[in-house]
Amino acid sequence: MTRTPLIAGNWKMHLTRPEAVELAKAVAGASKGLTDREVMIAPAYLSLAAVKEAVTGSPVRVAAQNVAWEKQGAFTGEISPPMLQDVGVDMVILGHSERRHVFGEKNAMINQRLVGALRFGLTPILCVGETLDEREQGNTFKVVAEQLSQGLQDVQAEQMQQVVVAYEPVWAIGTGKTATKEQAQEVHAFIRTALEDLYKKTLADSVRILYGGSVKPENIDSLMAQADVDGALVGGAALQAESFARIINFT
Ligand code: PGA
Image (cartoon, rainbow, N blue to C red; front, side, top):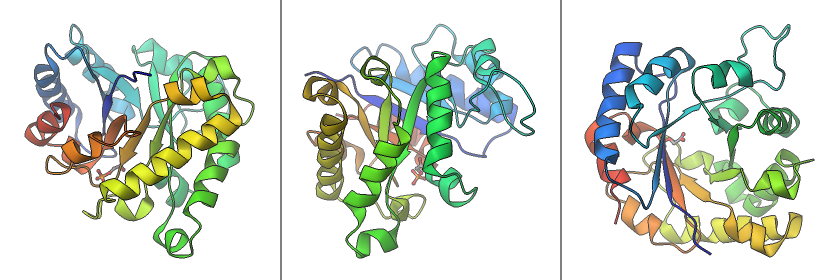
């Protein structure tokens, strides 16, 4: 089973519009001619349209960092799938650890967002991952399995082909403390087995599972060499053109 690697940059709440456009152009430049992998960037909502325009003509995909589940309505502070599609966005990060732990989003709401995204034809990246406490208590697999089964509730097999999963151990995000390649592979393999239980082996084998949490130029190659690591979701190191270019060009 061949899974096209996906290197995704999550810009979080960083960069003004001109800064975002400048970085997007650099990412487009660094992605030129790459046909064996996909590159994605997720700027803040307000920069989506300008970034999309800046990468037009390049293979770089543009994603949002969250999305609501309805077309429109009384949802103050939210953005709808058609609003994203209107500016050319077709991917969305969902259930990021900061959404879960800073803003209190629970599996049920993340599932609602994911089902809504799929209903409108957006490609969701569902983030899962345990806190340090949960890891130390030996609950990593339990937490990840729950986030997967609850996050994917009511998602049919044919829709699942659209979904990307990202394993991001909370203790590794923004801390400089990357999971070792063995720790990453162990949980990625577990996720694939969990997907096999929820769907079928052929489908589980086709789902891309990204690793996220302090991915850097220094560790990308060894992470990508793991059998079940199909890409990376990169925060801090995606904010500098040079380091992200090195990550995109992993060997
Ligand atoms: P980090 O963030 O690379 O800065 O650890 C990853 C993420 O939050 O997706």
